[in-house]
Length: 214
Ligand code: HEM
Image 1 (tube, rainbow, N blue to C red):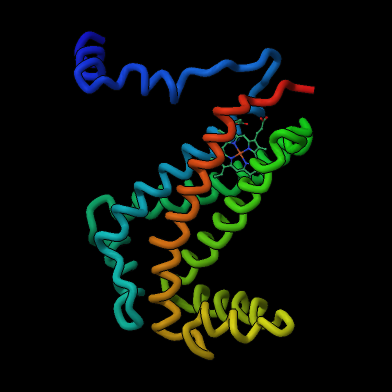
Image 2 (image 1 turned 180 degrees about the vertical axis):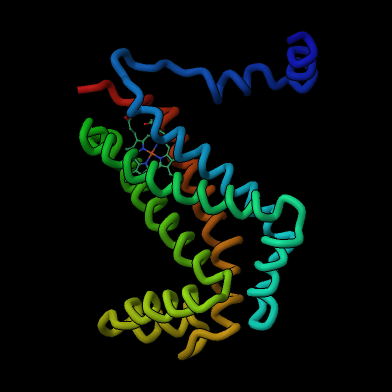
């Protein structure tokens, strides 16, 4: 479209845009090579719906549960945003698992792509932690006890377990401090780290290209 061309030209974005989106694709790839892209799309949906939820969610011991009820029942499109957040998180996890299986089956983890496999594993762990920290936020019985059990598992690691437990719970028990801490991990620390690692993931893919099918 003319207007888009004009806009890209005036912003001098044409080549920048080409640099990001245009690349050589090896022959013989199939739909399984779309799983990384599906994971990325799910991540974007999750991120944007999360931004909207953060307008209304209150990470406090007394208000968290009520704020979730408010989002669900009073906020316009609140139920839809919660639904998009939940479903895109599920699609993200499923597509990451399938994407990793594709990379494993096509042996794309072999040099020179071994570093990207390691970056991918780190993203995998951080995305699981996103799920775990997000689970506590509704602050209902299910969330509370799942966090007690999950953090107890971390606490049972020999030698360092207690220190880890204290860091993630912010004390010996799961309290409002744990909720604040999980909220901070969920909306700031983990997304920041995931975005940095995704940048590295895409940078390596761009430099090395996608592996040829076996
Ligand atoms: C949010 C998570 C992730 C996103 C958005 C993502 C995205 C992508 C995309 C778009 C590609 C290009 C080819 C394709 O789509 O199959 C790719 C390739 C690759 N990914 Fe991921 N990925 C993620 C997680 C992972 C994980 C968990 C691993 C492994 C443990 C991994 C390892 C790799 C490797 C080694 C390649 C290069 C494959 C090749 O050249 O054929 N990625 N990723």
